[in-house]
Image (tube, rainbow, N blue to C red; front, side):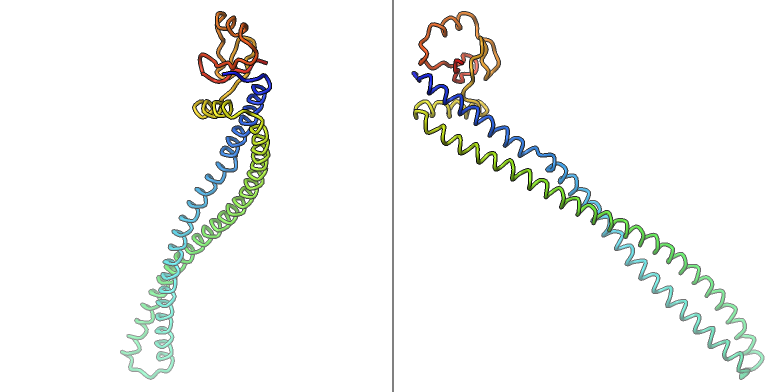
Length: 241
């Protein structure tokens, strides 16, 4: 295929633009904020799950505490009634002895229940502290996620603006290239990782970075400037510069 020096220059210019678009898209997919958000989301999920477990434990302890309070109140009320009856003196000596024994037994029971209630309250305080810590951590993670999302949006917007700018430049250069040559470039580019043309620097193809043998270089030198070159190794368009 023949292509003027100008046409070959346009193809190389188009490749440079395509390289910039490729680099921008690669950068877009590998922004550090993307990995950071994945990490933050995992931490949020873990903290949320742990907070739910702690909340469930807190609810259970609250139920135990209420039951304990009811038991203490019941025993305390019974003691008050028995002590009031003892104080009234309206009982036989035997009944008074029984009441005294019952009050003593109830007070021991009251002490035991109050100890249990204290242990539950200590557990409740520990769980409440853990719940508050997790809630604070979760809020901090959500704040951090918002900040990272903001940075990601800003970086993404900036890169997309650059890509749109390069796409416009690509379209402009593409209109200057003859269709058969453009079609060949696009076909080669599609089969070679986005690179359809490369400059020939010295005796090396900058597409595959392999040196061209001396015999082939002599043949190239003998060709007319408008003869379109192809690398023997990668088959990309070679543009003499």
